[in-house]
Image 1 (cartoon, rainbow, N blue to C red):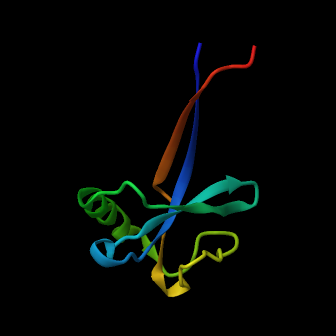
Image 2: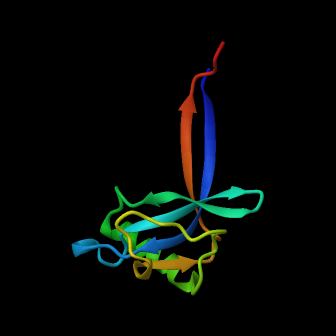
Length: 102
């Protein structure tokens, strides 16, 4: 028997990329905690040009000036000016299969 774990991570922003991916480098993800949203990490590998265009079409109308996080994160190799914050209404979903311990 396999069980599925599923966790969603609100998308709270995106970073500027480089080269061909200059429009979007990575999504900035959060995790929900009792006191609000906290930075969970960034994800950008595996996104094709079509994915980037689709994501930007969904994210641009949600742009905001300030971070929706409890504390703005310090991201390695990312300048604060290279982050565009968005309203956290969309989420990335992580699905994992695991075997139960017997």
